[in-house]
Length: 452
Image 1 (cartoon, rainbow, N blue to C red):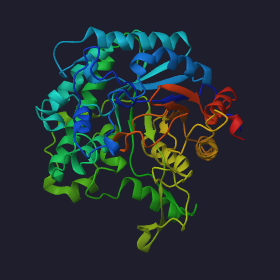
Image 2 (tube, rainbow, N blue to C red; image 1 turned 120 degrees about the vertical axis):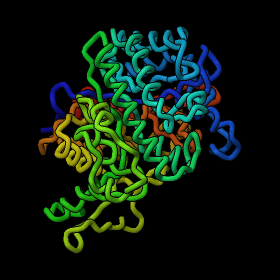
Image 3 (cartoon, rainbow, N blue to C red; image 1 turned 90 degrees about the vertical axis):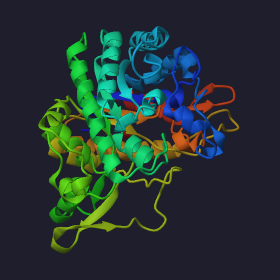
């Protein structure tokens, strides 16, 4: 089989704070990322997302570029504070209007909108009331989800509640690398994580209750993907165990988040390790969290490797000296797109959507006026072949979203990193299709047969 399954969805993604700009326009409220960018030394070279890619003004041009590439779907996030400037209370008609127009333009171009409700740009006014640590935070998020459903669900049917909770909790509240830049104790981190899961559950309930068209709902999750050094059964089981059963004092284990969602309980190893640091959990909490989902979104860029050590326990295996890496200094490990989806499918039995996969590259405009990125084409080819291998092996997978549609504000790295299929010249806002965009167009046209 060279092609991907019939009906497989090919798309690309972006996030509101990374591309929109228009930070002080249209009634938008302040976010924790605005405040992070105002803080000296937090963002590379003092960059901010105030202008970003200026997608807030150039969305018509961007939709036409997506159409030119042949995207079947566009994954984008809603800026919470465009809809509810203070995070709750009165809605903002201008903000809703922006997404109304974007959704209409996408549908007119034959591109299906896949909406993420939250991609890290938390309302600053709610942060000042406790943010994800507040017991009211789940309700804040559920109420926001209801407003978005009322506004867009007559046209939008594909939904994700949250993007990468391990990042906005782990990097935002534990290590302090991302907004809001806190370094909390681990019991507070776990409490915020639990409230995040409750917010997810209430958002799913709101979407199920209020969507005008039948919704398909998931979450875009990330974590440590682990691959075995060989296909020996012991190594495979060691890799599976490392991905779901091995916990450290952080939030990067997939099972910490998705066992409660799919099984209605926290992993016993997490409970045993964290002990009194775990939040107090009620049966009703778990009922709220364990709302049925339609797919499992996975953001995967790389993996680590393990082998079966003594008594079959996982032992980490170092990558060889001089291994390939992207400009994010992430290893190039295509096996991640085989083992990650396979292990998740075997554990949870939910259709897989790769909601992010791509690479940061050293892109610039060449003397001939083009942007040539053969490394990205090679990277994506290798990863997509592994994803196809997982599907051929029995994994039910229904989509793939390249990250990202265009270069953008890469969080604490500012504009230093370029992930896009489309090059953005930030001073002018000019867009240039990279070679990878044309390559991806051919992949989509052939339903994946074009990767060879």
